[in-house]
Length: 168
Image (cartoon, rainbow, N blue to C red; front, side, top):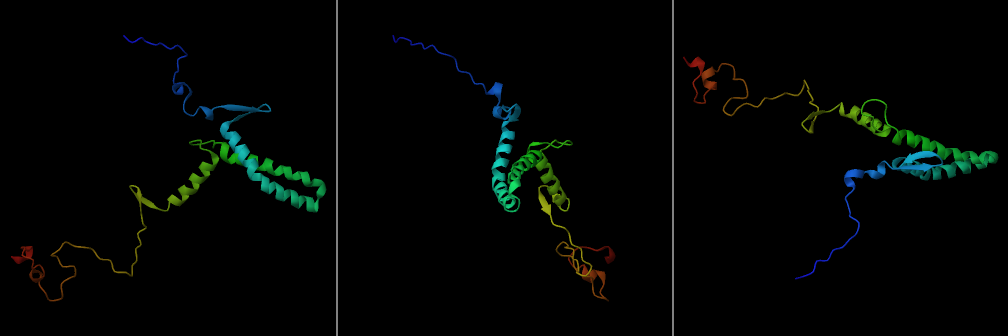
C-alpha cells in the first residue's frame, strides 16, 4: 500500500474577487505631501517629458535677448502640466462626467454627425433633388412606362391579356 505524503504550507487563495482587476488604478502615491493616483502620475510625467524640447527652445530664445531671465523658461513645464491635467485628468461637470478631452472630441464628432442620416448602422447619402433632371419611376413588367400616343385607345395600350374596366 503506497504511503500518502502530506505537505504543509500556507494556503493560496485567488484575491482577484477582493482586489479587482484594476487594483493599480486606485493605488495612490504620495509625492511631497500630494496624493497622485497612477493615471495622474502618468499624465504629469508625460507632460514633463513632452515639454522638454519646448523648454529648451524657450531657454535659448530668452538667453539670447534677456540672459538675466533665462530661468523663466522653467515656467513652460508648469504650463504643460497644468494644461494636460486640465484636459486629460479632470472630468466635465455635467452630463456623463467624461474626461475633458473626450467631451471635446465627442462634441466635435456630434457636430459632424448631425449632417448625415443613418439607417441602422449604415449612413444614407443625401438625396439630391434636381428639377431639371427627369425622374423615372420603375413599374412592374408588362405595364407601359410612357403615356400612350395621341389617338390610341386604352384597350390598345393595355394589351397584356388582362381585362380592362373600359373594355365593356
